Image 1 (spheres, rainbow, N blue to C red):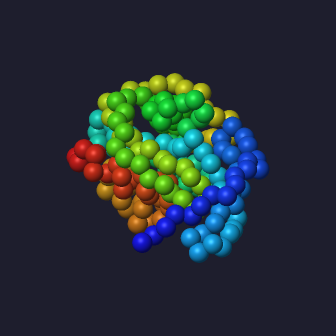
Image 2: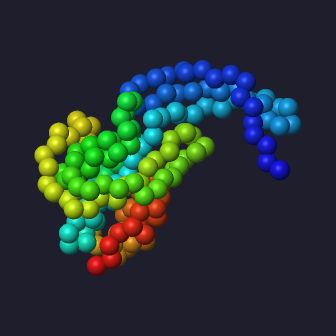
Length: 178
């Protein structure tokens, strides 16, 4: 039977408006002790937005750490004091310029070895254009794809981020097939 690790101590070694760096000391079931360093967040959101023509709204964006352009769904972090739904509404407006009917359909943890982040997945429909101020670090190119084109973009390696891949798997059963 699997046994949990025992937390001995926990300290914050860095903090900013998006996340905290945490250092835990732990004890394994066999008595051995160790260190675990990870990022603690308020969670994240990913939105798969489908317009009235059945197209999926995505964007191209530069990813600094990978030094590569990614094809991504709207999404981002949940700020302190913000609900996941509020974050989803904000990200949808900022990243693809729409508002709409937003429904939570599931969740995933994209990298549970490095962060405790749980990402909520939303599907958006009945979309309307909206003006929103963008974050100064983000620059997007709007892309509209059919469901089949999204699948091909995954196969062709245009969609490569685990956040987007996991979100697509969770959201796809809730989309309207055209």
